[in-house]
Structure formats: C-alpha cells, structure tokens
Image 1 (cartoon, one colour):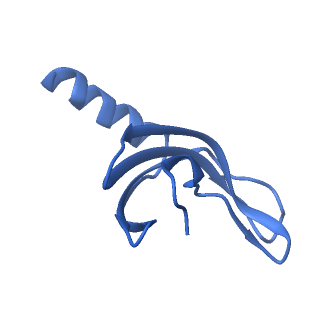
Image 2 (tube, rainbow, N blue to C red):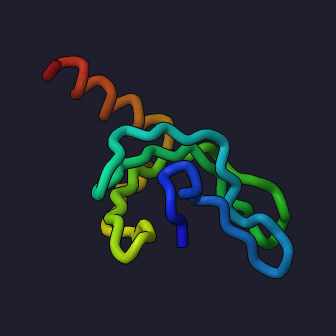
Amino acid sequence: MAETVDELTVSYSEDGREVVKELDKEVLTKGAWATLMFKYQDMDKATGEYGPTKVTIRRYKKMGGSYRPQSKFNISGEKQAKQIADVLNRWF
C-alpha cells in the first residue's frame, strides 16, 4: 500500500509483464482524501501491444498510514474525454 500520494500508481504487472502502463499522473487534491487523474494504456494480452490511451480519476482515503482506493471513474476514450472537457468548459 502507498503511504504517500506520490507512490500511488495505476501501473500493474502480471507474470513479469506490465499489463497496465501509466503514462502520466496529475494530483488534483492531497490530504486524508486524495484525488488523482491517471493517463494509461492497457496491454492486449493476446498481442502484447498496448491499446488506446485512457484516463481514470481515482479517490483514495488515508487509513492506518496508507492510501486505500475508495472510488474511480474511467474515461473510455478520446471522444468521451473531449465531451467531458466541453461540458466543463461550458459550466465554468
């Protein structure tokens, strides 16, 4: 478990292969509750190739000295990301 926000990642390996590759990370909030946005790619296990870039927004709560995942929202692709950005730009 991660003890600091900087240690949080979405990178994930199975059998020595990185099946989720983190490309970038943005810390949106810090503290007892942390919110982070990650840019990442999933590996197609059949081909070994990484798929399209995706985004996930994750909330963590610090309990017992470690950050634990509480919730997440995955943005499935570029089109959805642009729609969300358009709405936010209109609202704010």
